[in-house]
Amino acid sequence: MSVVTRPAGQGESYSTSPTARSAWRSSRVIVLLGALVVLAGVLGVVLGPQPGPSRPLDPDDTSFAGSKALAELLRDRGVTVDRVDSAEAAAAKSAAGDRLLLITDTTFIDDISLSEIPGDRLIVGDLSLGVLAPGVSTEPEQARLRSREPACRLPAAVAAGSAYMGGAVLRGTAGSTGCYPAGDGHALVSYAHSGGVTTVVGDGDFMTNRRLAEDGNAALALNLIGTGKAVTWVVRPENPPLLELPGDEERSMYDLMPGSIRWALYMAIIAIGITAFWRGRRLGPVVTERLPVIVRAAETVEGRGRLYRARRARERAADSLRAGTIDRLTPRLGLGSGAGRHEIVAALAARTGQDPHQVGAALYGPPPADDAGLVGLAGYLDTIERQVSEL
Image 1 (cartoon, rainbow, N blue to C red):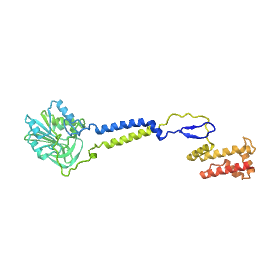
Image 2: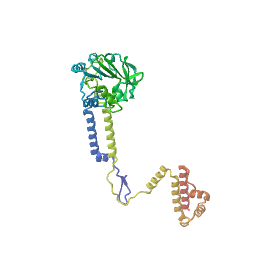
Image 3: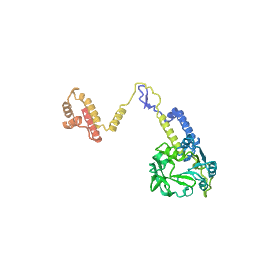
Image 4: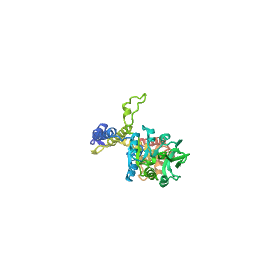
């Protein structure tokens, strides 16, 4: 804290520490600019374009859950990949020639119409297997997704090796081939039927952009799909028909807000608080003091006493009291500055009539054990000084 004092003869002083008003005047421009920057960031998060939802196993989706990378690998190998979102479009593609039907989602799609399309099929997940893959059943419990060995003779799996498999636990028909053991069944089942070869995998996570580069996932996906035939890739429609549910109520404005707005507001409040704290604690310019500075002795004594008390420095406080008493009493007793402790104690005892042992303990004894002892010592030394002064 800076202190300004007046010229000699005027002992008043006053503080020049910045007040709340002066701190606001000096930092309000910075605070307002910071608030505007934070507000612009919040509005950008709230009103800016929001990323669309990911489309799992979609050949056009570049998110972790999509399969854009696999589709590009197939096209690089010369395989035609056609993305469709309806049974009618899949049937129209298959009518042009022998193709592989890759089914990743049958939501809002007529699975019965899909089952009537001839040719090879690759079914990903537990998707109406009773219609699309008759004879293949699933266990009630799902298998944990992890790296598994094929443990079968299916060429596509043997060439790929270990892969990230799991999900639905499959049981195939008689004569089918099961690969990647999981639970009481397999994570992959393949069998031949009159229209071609049907392959079912319990989960398609190994085909996603996230997992494609791990283990033998890419090799397994390419071996199962890249058979040389064009691929009809069936996905969920982007704009499925809306279903009106009973009891659907209108949502409030808060329900329509994105979920990230709460954290954006929290970050804005924290940023404003940090900025205000940072700028509000900045002191002003250095104030030049006009000498001499007059400080009352009582203020110095009180300040030093508070420091001793805060640090519990009773020994140092007692030494200061004893040293000051000895310096003041030595000339009054007619002793020189080099007088020893025995001479000083004997002279004080003779002058005041006090017990020499008590006087010696007060001037040269051990430090007080507590604050009460320190106060008592100060009082006793003051009494000795008063007696010497009055005699």
